[in-house]
Length: 159
Image (cartoon, rainbow, N blue to C red; front, side, top):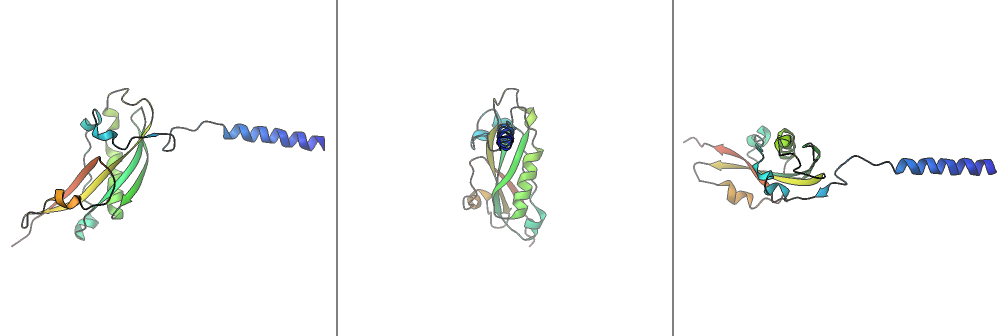
């Protein structure tokens, strides 16, 4: 009986030690700072907008997608997830754009710890004939985010 009790106690100590192992920086322990990218030096980062998804363009669909992601002090991006999307093609294009940005071009020591940020991507059409502007249209989109980028498709209407 004492031997079983000793074995059980030893097993509990080992299992407890396993759960105390520190994890790497992830979305869980990154500090949320959703508006960080609207401030210097972040606003100087070259962030090309995604191409308008061909599937959405063919269907003449407009909308938005917001993605959240973790930035590490060494300029790496991880844990990219779609927070909200009007269309799955918009979410996929937004995630791809964030992956392609050159985060390592930022000055050293820009971050002291991982941060969690988000960016909203608006996808809309501008037309020559009726002068429709994306600015007015994107105000009706419901995706969250103050850091906003627009992917604009121009439509030329044939007479």
